[in-house]
Image (cartoon, rainbow over all chains, first blue to last red; front, side):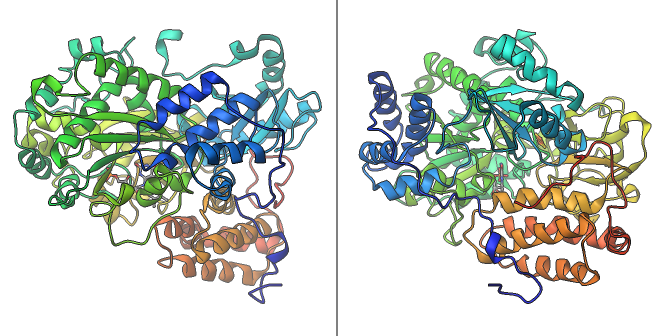
Length: 201
Length: 436
Ligand SMILES: Cc1cc2nc3c(=O)[nH]c(=O)nc-3n(C[C@H](O)[C@H](O)[C@H](O)COP(=O)(O)O)c2cc1C
Ligand code: FES
């Protein structure tokens, strides 16, 4: 169905929120260490505003088990003192939360204008070609996921790739395939890091 | 008189982010020390007199914003520092927080003192994890040295600064959406009024200030409002950070006065040093992806809020995206609409549905399947988003379409007529990007 005679767009309508429910997964609880971290962070907010710590709580889940399941959302709801639906509302909105397993290395390739002007579209093509996957997919061995993301705030270092929480700058398309090999060989040492960290150079 | 950088003068030096360096080389925390001897109202007056305008995008006078923060209320007040930095083409707060974090912390503390707040939350985008680590280390140092915490410098003033990590949402940079996100909800804007100054974080009076804005505050307190105002054109005082990216030889963050013209910023030796590979200049987006395009004829405009506005665009976040003549303007609009449809928070129908629709139309035209009436349809859909949304996102999303149609309509027509992209470039994808 369309709202407008000029455009039949309804069937493939897009929105950033994932509309599928996350799988329930196994029972979840924080490790003692993560529980202590959460209990510490929560004190930064007024006592009746525990919900402010929800993003932090979800990052902890993701660090602990790699992605966010229904069970872990219920756990977070318990920690915060809100409903599981409220947690799911948040999880489904923010792009840095995963509700499915991702690779050991998540290659977040910036695709927005400044990076695209210097070849980011080609970088994605080269990375995907090398790994035999499409953007959004993970290699069968669980090593790599490629995701196209929007401007990472380092456009002077285009094209930029964020790998998990690490930074890799100026990845020319011609170097993309070798970059994958380099990660396989050297792990995090393959990343350039942020050019502003002049001390590490 | 030549302009001397004051925000970024030390950023290339090793360990510039440490407290020790800051105290030794940058008169660190002297602004705070001085501020604590003044009355809060006097600080607001100084910031007003300096003419400091918000560096986050809207250019609203910071002194006024602080003055509007409700005074007679039993509720706590807050500063929410906007470190979401997600406007495409913008990467200045990144440098400030990474290399000069104590300046921001000092600005937060003075801001809190001025408006009567005890807590500042720095809302940093989730992707800046490496920046956050630097910032948190700096905050720890400041606590240990007694510049934050209880009874700062024996003045009786208490102030806490906390970093709050976002999780991937451009809209979280909009001030009311930022507050929603800080409260642990989806980053979606609120209906205004009430403005955050009256009912912001937890419904308490809140000042939302950009990182660069707050970094200017210690300098104003130390050097005086006249010094600050004198650095730039009337009503456009102070130092300004320009982020230059795209097809230039030396992209980066450059600090200059707002007398500096766009042409100097692109071609100047101390700035971006001209077009990459000597190619021909085609267009510039002067204020982050949300503002109208300017052309070669506009380049002698000083890059100030008011001058750029007079030239028909906006200084916005001062993200200058420079493009050479290999850039297809239909592709450009498509690239940016991919961004906007993805980042639309979904609250207002015109933006949520319109953004998706525009993207699909642009893709059709770019891939050579466009019909002549699609061009008018693009104009119609974009015009119908403008002014019909709760926040400025809707206008921002329509802008790339309206500005390219306005200046480069012939390129759209050529695409439709020839049934293909008339300006393919080697740096673009080999396979056409399909709608998904
Ligand atoms: C869609 C949208 C995104 C925004 N993103 C940012 C941002 O990333 N950083 C920022 O400082 N301001 C951003 N702003 C502007 C803020 O709403 C707000 O005006 C600003 O933080 C106020 O601070 P200032 O007065 O110091 O500029 C954005 C506005 C809109 C409408
Ligand atoms: S466009 Fe890629 S980091 Fe900004």
